[in-house]
Length: 153
Image (cartoon, rainbow, N blue to C red; front, side, top):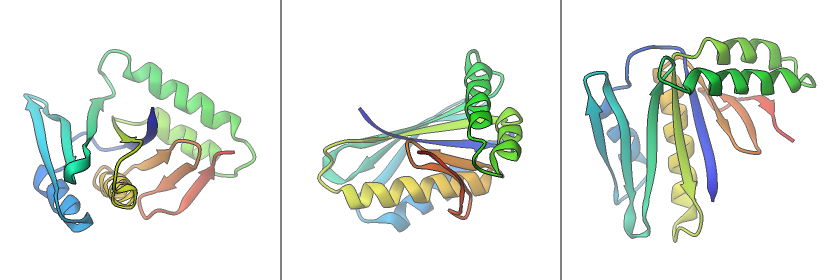
């Protein structure tokens, strides 16, 4: 099990791999990425985080099988968070998402602080590059600058 980060992007194009690698280098020593690509652009990145293991970042386009249903589920979930004035507009943004990124933070990594910084920095970077927002399990939904949009309880 691990903590999930999700980025809901409004733009269609894949974020620049060189910019992602630059973002990762700013997080600390021993961080590198290996991206896998197809005709649609990159779809998976394995991010090596020192000697303790790796993170896997996956990119899904909204028209891929099963992704639209997942986005609709997130929109329905946001609809239930009516204690926040941002839930309605964020629900609409979830419905309009063109690409979804998932990042799973593993448990029991020897450098938890680095992993935390890395996951937040990468989520913010991707949200900025795709004009989107991001979500952290059991924490909430955030804008690209890291501002809380909807808190999860």
